[in-house]
Image (cartoon, rainbow, N blue to C red; front, side, top):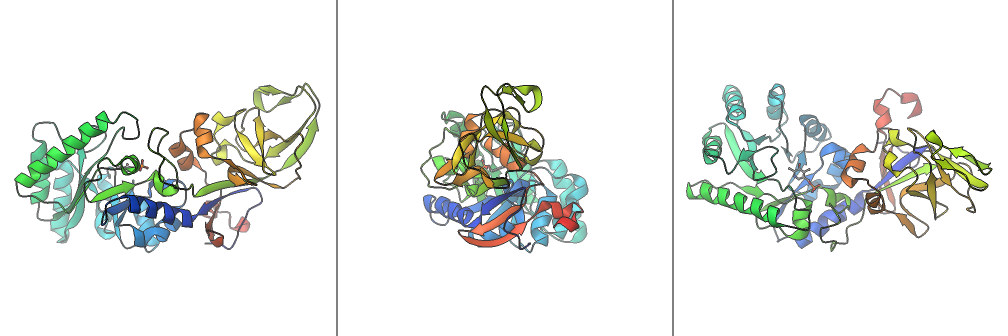
Length: 395
Ligand SMILES: *Cc1c(COP(=O)(O)O)cnc(C)c1O
């Protein structure tokens, strides 16, 4: 990591202390001894997978990722604990599972055959989790179909496959109406019971995601998968907001231009905003190319000198304009796009009200935005994805 604490165009601040604290809050809410799979897929929801994983490695049972590449990134960063891939892996990457000791999610006989063959050839066992589809309709053994039990039984009976866990995923546990989640949980329970009747016990069983943790649904098993709540964001408006989790990420930029504009002038593409009076306008050198949602055009605000200043007109790829009439502001002054400044806050929930899907925003926070890490007030280090873009002279 680099030694820079701020950048002159834009940067995001990630408070790793908050992530650790959010994880602790979940663990305190859960039954004692409950294992937590920390979901760090998609670069830890945009926060930086290596830094986040290192910060919580001692506090979680395993990491959940989406791709083999993400798992290898963790291994290369020195993460030695268990890593579970929550999706499907292309056959061409199977060998990497052995090389880097990564657990796949298994649910078809075709996958089993290939992996059992590889295990036999290499004379090694592969740890896996069995995926069950109880109603998400995405991946997993379809638990209500004929022969559903046979698939798990065959996986469990394979000499070179070691089943370390079994899991399913909720489709709508973040909605007010929990009837579908309860149905999924019942299917999960039935399936596990049938396996038990046949003499199989599987070390880890898990179905709860963040919403499950918050609503205490699917938490009677021995592991949960903690995703968005780790980062201090509630999965939806409809779940209980009882844990004092705090958003780990905030986003800063520096004003690139200030001007006064007379009445009757159009601002930004399409002139969707036209000044009705003389206005003082600041240009912010950030746009949807950095992950700033274009849907916020003409809707959201930016904190300038601690005051909420509205966006004027459309968000461009790399810039947008805000109304700073009557606000004291200087060229190159730092402003807050997301987070707290001067007692005010622009929260991701404000953006959610305006049509932003919080998960999607976090995943889309771009490569052009360096991440500066703190633990509380203590600066930890910096990760600038642009360093990987052949831009050494700027690093
Ligand atoms: C992404 C994902 C999670 C995490 O979901 P959150 O809502 O962020 O907690 C858990 N389990 C699976 C299978 C996932 O794909």
